[in-house]
Image 1 (cartoon, rainbow over the protein chains, first blue to last red):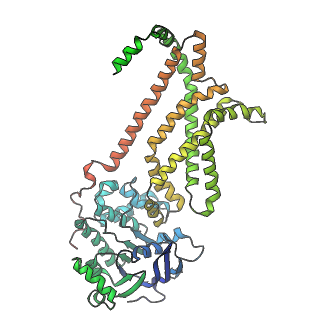
Image 2: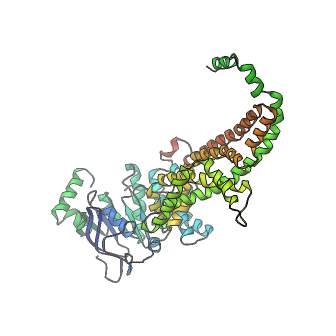
Image 3: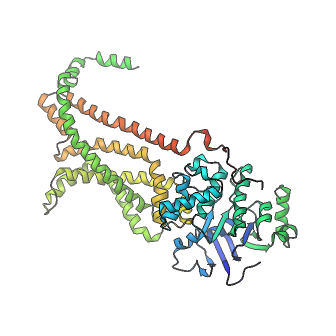
Length: 253
Length: 264
């Protein structure tokens, strides 16, 4: 399942990105079809987060092209705000707005960016919160919620913009182990609903269950990619085997 | 401690004379209503100036925190402004504006010292206040702006709805500090011929050859400033309680939290 040329929800061609002397991404090529769930795995510093931040145009790229449903978003003169509406991103550290309650966190962008009325935005937000078991938290402030609840709110906040593509940047890495499941279940439900997602993760069991394709990043390149069954049981590359062995030794697969 | 100090003061050789010229009860009560009446001028001065300062200071702070080479001229302009007006002694600026500008006799330019007092205080205090705002803006973690922008909010919307509300809440205590400084510095404008509380006090002192009116003025300033500080404390505490709730509840998971259910 490698996405057709025309139907690609996301296409990345020859993406390079460096921070000063440090080359973080060194020629990434990736095509994602609609409804695909891509898991990005690899050691810390392999470029997973940077790749997601580049797709969301938080980081300017040095070379290459990123195309979303046929529109090149890295072209000169493109309105970045318009692109970002279509791409949701959820961060490791939640990044909720601490001065607003949950419902205001979720409705801020629909109201201010999409121009929805307060009533419409709140009705939609309440439906989403309900769906993810947060209905009773709508009027709470983020500091009152557990990490798992905060991260679910962050996912709802991204979903409220009805993005075509959702980027998840190690969304469970900052959570206590017993709070990880509730967040992973939300993502599972989104995958079942057909949301196109790129997920940078250290949860290998989860990646194996949910991903339609797994990409192993190493030194700023996609070294190997394929269906989870192949990557996790019969990796072709020595580096992939080495990485997975270390994960197994750590008891995380 | 205080008892000893009080004893030393009261038993000092100059005490009877001091008492007569600084602590005249009759004169105090006579001066108080007059002082209070003129204090109203100071109140108007600092209320009008404060509104202008809060706005102008914020504009300066936002200009200084604009990123990228495109905004370099604006950043430079704001930086030079702040440098200059923080460096100049306040009295000097008040003199130059209060005496200098009306002396130019330009048609339509107001001669009222009240106007120039407001202008001078605004120019001076905006420079300080902009630095307070800027510290607040920089204390908001960049991930907050990233989150706002990633939702499609423009730079201005991110600033308006996400960064500034958090920044301003954090700098309320230092802003109040500057506000109290402003209240006290309103007496400086007595030098350009505006009859406000300090000028009034001087007049009373000269008329009676007695310093007690100053005591009345000091009391008036205390009565206004101290409740304001308590009010700010209260506002901050209420805001924090609303956000965090009970102290310990913040980090603990609550019943019914696993709404999505099931194991991984």
